[in-house]
Amino acid sequence: MIDWSWVADHLGVLAFRVLQHLELTAIAVGAGFVISFGLAIWSVRRRAVYPPIAALAGILYTIPSLAMFAALISVTGFSVLTAEIPLILYTLVILIRNIVAGFDGVPAEVVEAARGMGYTSWGRLWRVELPLAVPLIIAGLRLASVSTIGLVTITGVISDSFGGLGYFILTGYHLQFATEIYVGAVPSILLAVAVDVAFVRLQARLTPWAATRGVAAG
Amino acid sequence: MFADPKVPSSAGRDATGMCAATVEFRHVSKSYDRRDGPAAVDDLTFTVPAGSVCVLVGPSGCGKTTSLKMVNRLIEPTGGQILVDGTDVAGEEVTALRRRIGYVIQQVGLFPHRTVGENVTTVPRLLGWSREQQRERAEELLGLVGLDPARYRDRYPAQLSGGERQRVGVARALAADPPLMLMDEPFAAVDPIVRERLQNEFLRIQAELAKTILFVTHDIDEAIKMGDLVAVMQAGGHLAQFAPPDEILARPASDFVARFVGADRGLKRLSLSRIGALPLHQAVTAVAGEPVGDARQRSLADPFPFLLLIDRAGRPLGWLPDRDVPADGIVDERLAIPASPLLERETTLKDALSMMIAADVQAGIVVDPAGRVLGLLTMEALGAAGRAGAAGRAGAGAALRRAERRPAAARPPAAAP
Image (cartoon, each protein chain N blue to C red):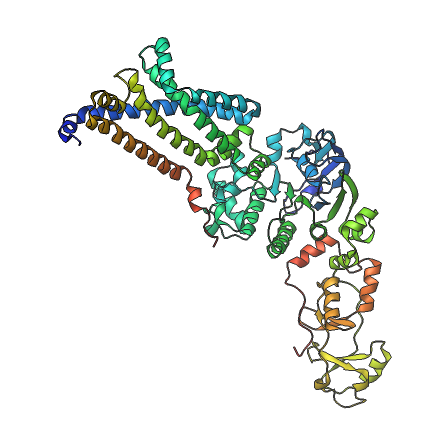
């Protein structure tokens, strides 16, 4: 069923597409995280702005990706922005909610103790609340990354110069060539799993205290 | 620190260089527009002298926690002033103010992502102490609260028991040597046995450090035990009475206070008082195994119808009813009835009463640390002490604190030593 010789002949372009896939994902999740983090911090400190921000991010998420790519071509042409803008916008709803939930999940007594000890409000945010929000923030990054890796394949419809592994899926589909579809889909899945595992490792490194939870006191 | 050269606060710093601050509430009020907010406070005025423990006590919703949080400005008053060593806290930079005031809360609020050592040095770190200074301070404080630094310093809060967490919380509050500590129901979340131990350790530490402490509790027994001064508050944030514990118990200022301290306030007063310098009834004694001499005459002349047999070192062996005392010859210790509890000067009157009731006797034998008879504490004397108001006490908090350091003074009832 799989034409292994075709696969062997296309290892070079496969590697290129894997890297492109990672690059498109990294830019989208990175930029999405920066925007989301700013909006989430604003929401945490000024509660009134959170409902409209969350609503807007939610509405953006409902726009069909194909429609958004098509609409953007008339604005940003075939530049990388046409691929990245939708990818970034789709990460916002997941990331903002998770970051805000992370800060909300900091125990009230910890916040009160930090205030009572004389932390400034920014000092408290960075040194006490942010570290404790890390598990939920990383949970958001995992979800956003996995969903973005899936969406990157669709950016192939904009042009052949995008799409990452989606390029193989689309051409395989047009040519009715199953091997090429597998060459696009399987590495895409493996990529998603690898990125997810990487984030789990990162979380363990960032939150050494969490590993000790529940260990009985001596 | 808070020291203001114009304010006579020399009492705040004693010969050993420890510092404490006076705290003054002047017509402090806090009102809320919403009904569901924290409890309001109404025109609170009182002064806590440097180095003393003032307990704010009252039912829930009486504004005691609100009052506490207005001192470090976690809550801002709507009226009046709070002065720490003569300086109005409203004029202080709020983070600087809080770094100078120790703060302990019921749920402790340790930082879960920081080790015990890092938690303890939170305020020193904010104040920019060097790493070396922080490390030394953490060692010192963990030792002070009874946690072995080598074992505990690098643990995370999740690895501690409730009692250990609260100790770390107290150490953290003490880290920058604040002249004032605010403690909001610090021992309410631990079980009664741990609470008792933490209370006693707190009194030991306080005897050493002599900080000014504002302590909130809803437990009147804790208030009486911990406080040099007790502020009883009632719903609406009114100060119902502000006085030393003994006075609260002896002379409740209102029906509310009387009800709040409970029908057993007489017993509570006895628990504040120690046998101490109470006049003891001189026991008529005879040394076992020696000639009885005029013991029978002396015993009959005494209103207490028993002769106390002692050994040659003066330690009690037991009682001999007057009628069994031989007119002459040798006193036989086998006749002695080993009945009365042995009491020490440090025994509280409440414990003494309890032991005497349990042993069903009219008198307890007060002995010195070597176990020699000093005299008898009779039921009559106990009653008189209760009525007169604690003749044996030497300043409630201070006396209690000194005695807390000693093991329980109670001993098993008199038998052959």
